[in-house]
Length: 275
Ligand code: NAP
Image 1 (cartoon, protein in one colour):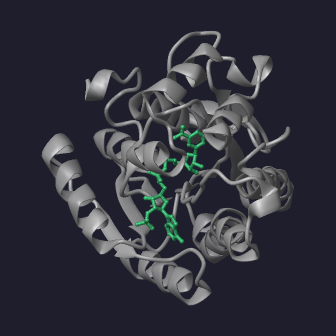
Image 2 (spheres, rainbow, N blue to C red):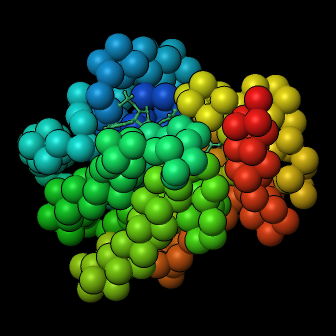
């Protein structure tokens, strides 16, 4: 059985899956999980080296080839080029995961306009661009197709010290529900997925999550402990499976109950700024 998965190995046999930002962290975890369950997978992001490494890692671990393309979600031309590639390669798309993101700790009072714009451009505008470019391909899917937008558990509440990311993810959540309605008659489901804390390399460096801060995050997780990309991938597989064909415009929160009890970013950000 694929990587302790609860799902059957051929669950996504023949399905075509596109994951933005799929060369690192959770996105790569999603890519490997879809490959292990029979899907054809395309990942796209800015850094060619990372894409190459991801493809080698996926091949080594799953025995399957994935496709990759250099793409910047901030550049509409680059996004439409990848959509054209999907059209010529597959002719349709069954699953889109809008996972690409950028984030760093900064209080709004000292955040430059460029910093604000960069994060909103990747997270919110990027989700709009990629979703719109993929819409004609998702419509062509022979079965009900699925879009999963990756958000964060500060999207519907305050996002202290990550205000750019919070505002952008909140916009993505709203867009998720709008598209769920606008695209329901096209048999395209659109949902948001809210992961728990996963200590990916970029999270550790961009959010200054050293061991001490990570411990503090852990203390805010009622079910205990940070989680991992494999576990998060299982949630995304479920959301994209036919078992979830009655779910659209919804949000799956898989953070061990963290959002119910406190805002870890508030504590972590305060500590970071105090030091
Ligand atoms: P990650 O490793 O930093 O992955 C983000 C990916 O986005 C990178 O591969 C990056 O690749 C890509 N990206 C950034 N800017 C881009 C652009 N302009 N165009 C195309 N791709 C771009 O992050 P992660 O920790 O796995 O997070 C994955 C998702 O989960 C994100 O949406 C994040 O907000 C969300 N999330 C994470 C956590 C967590 O604890 N890790 C918690 C809640 C939510 P390039 O640099 O090559 O472009």
